[in-house]
Image (tube, rainbow, N blue to C red; front, side, top):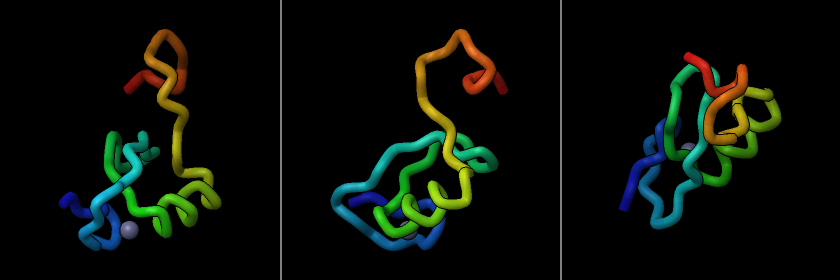
Length: 54
Ligand SMILES: [Zn+2]
């Protein structure tokens, strides 16, 4: 079991995402939907571009 980085809910399957403010985190589907809607999620494209630079 892992915990959602935002709501702290324990889930078996969390989505690993790159968050604009939190970095690499795991989110539940609900929070993923919210953050995606707020455009807080960055594409994890593997480097070599602006979206992967910190
Ligand atoms: Zn959550």
